[in-house]
Amino acid sequence: MSKERQIKPEQHITTDKDFELAIKEETFVNVIQNGMQIRPTATISGYSPDTIRMSDGSVIHRNANSFYAV
Image (cartoon, rainbow, N blue to C red; front, side, top):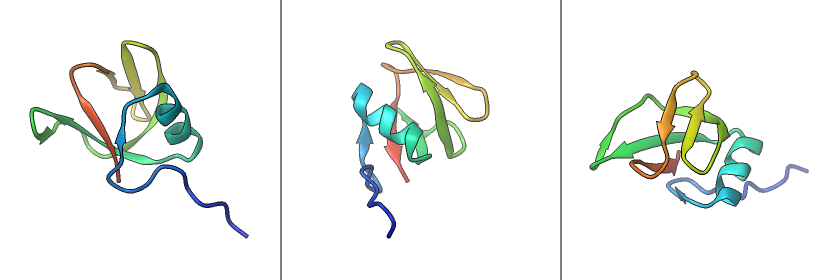
């Protein structure tokens, strides 16, 4: 029996808990800035209050971008 995912498709990921769940569930994420996707879809590998580290190694400013589950 598989466990139901807590991060749903198209969910806006904003809180520390959201980021923790996205990392745990290896959720693919779109990074949006000013209505445009700025990075290829990837998973999140870490976060801090100011930045998000993506699985490809890029570091993205948390407050300047929006993160949505795929």
